Structure formats: structure tokens, C-alpha cells
Amino acid sequence: MRELNLDRLRTLVTIADLGSFAEAARMLHLAPPTVSLHIADLEALIGAPLLVRKRGEVRASGVGEALIERARRLLADADEAMDVVQRQVQGLLGRVRLGASTGAIAHLLPRALEVLGQHHPGIDVQVAVLTSQETLSRLASGALEIGLVALPQAAVRGVTVLPWRRDPVMAFVPASWPQPRRATPRWLAGQPLILNDDGTSLSRLSTEWFAAMGEHPRARIQLNYNDAIKSLVAAGYGATLLPHEALSAAPLDPRIRMLPLQPRLWRPLGIAHRAGAVERSTQHVLDVLWQQKQA
Image 1 (cartoon, helix red, strand yellow):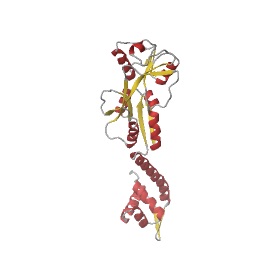
Image 2 (tube, rainbow, N blue to C red):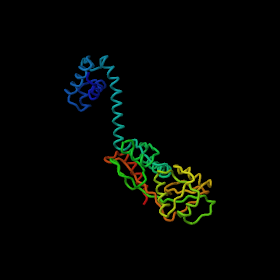
Image 3 (cartoon, helix red, strand yellow):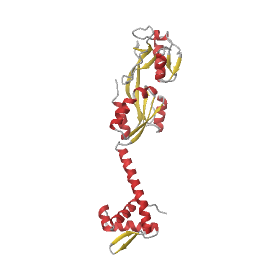
Image 4 (cartoon, rainbow, N blue to C red):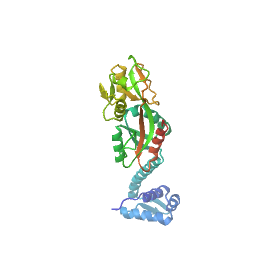
């Protein structure tokens, strides 16, 4: 059985509403023979008359009424679907899936999401907590649109990665400790340490920073949640190395002192997205993130 055609259903509904083939033709910008052909096709498909013509008046048959009632719902659904899709094409609506680490989510995303909500409230950003490698893998498979990743990263087919910002890595130490003006690898290696889990980009950066000065300290505990690490520092459990995101509005706990490192250390981040054409909703999120670019 052939499927119902929306154009023909729209013709049927318009004739029923206007009570005239000629008026329907003018309303739909169709030639009168085309309107007649649409109804003939529908009646052939249904196998029964849909319209009754009497004394210049056109009205729906019983079968026609039943079809028109359902046609109105189909046409309304089709119009709504087209409106939603067009709004998404225009960037007014959309879903954008983004992967990032807990640190980036906690300290860099809130302001971006606030700005996005002010200018593009119809865009829904769904955030996943992922490592940089997991983010790139999901971008390549099409499960994400955007990722915030540590740099450098090996090239991944189908994924574009651009430098975004770099933040200074600082020493976070209990305020009650005697402390120098700057934290060196030798001084920190002599303190109880709370460091990021092995395998994370920050762990690699920290290890290389210590090793460059001949230090190879062991952490008292390893975590991968920066706010939990800061809580332990505030409690006097140990010192840590964490990036200082200048955009973060969260005040530092008064029980913590933040010391610059000597030599300095930076945590570089990049923005990753799928290569090729970018949907407007995704582009809007990228634009807001680029506004937070920091040299």
C-alpha cells in the first residue's frame, strides 16, 4: 500500500476548511487541475470518496471527516518537526555534548555556560567528566561534539584540536606551614604531598617538573578531584600542585596559601571538536569558550 502524502493531505484539509476547490488552489498556490489530482490520488489510495460536491458546495464525506481529523494532527506534527529542525539549523535550539576533566568543569565551564544561557537559552550543553584520552575517543566516534583536553595530544583522525589557554600551576599548601616565597621542587619534595592520579596529564606535568630538578617524590595520597585535594590541603594533610584558573570565581579557603613555582610550570589546554562542518549550536558553544581564551 502506498503511503499518505502530506501535500495531498494538506490539499484535502484546505478544501474542507474553505469549502471550495478553487479557493484551495489559490490558498496553496496550485493550479486547479493539481488540486483535483491530489484528491483523486487520495481517493484512489483510500478506496472511497473523501469529498461530496453538491450545488457548488464541497463538504467531507464520513470517510473524509475521519481522514481529515487525523490529517490535521499529522500536518501539525510535521510543521512542528520542521520548526524544531529549522531552529536547530539556525542555532536557536540544539544539544551539544561536551567532555572535560573535573577541574575544567568546576572552574572554567560555569562562566561559559552562564554566558551561553544568556545569549542562546535554547542550547542544551550535556557535560561528561572524562580524561583527555576518553574525550578524544568519544569525539572520534561521534559521541561528543566538543572536548576540553590537556595538551599536547597525539593526532586523532577526524578530530581537530586547537590551543585554547594555559594556566599557571601553583603550589597549594596549608597556611599554617612555614613556607618560602616560592615553591621549588626540592622544598615540595620534602613535604607530604597530595597529587593527581598517575596517568592524568597533570600528574605527568608534575612528575616532569620534579624530575627536571632531580626530585622523585612519592605522594602521600593520589586523587583525581581537585576540590577534594584542596579540602585535604586545608586540613593540613599535605601540599599539592594544581592549576590556577584565573576565571574561577571561587575564593580560596583561608587555610590554604597559594605559592608560585620556581621554575614556573604551565598547564596547557586545548579545545577539540569533530573535523568538518560544525552545526551552529556547537559553534555557539565554541564561540563562548573562545571568549575565555587566555595567553
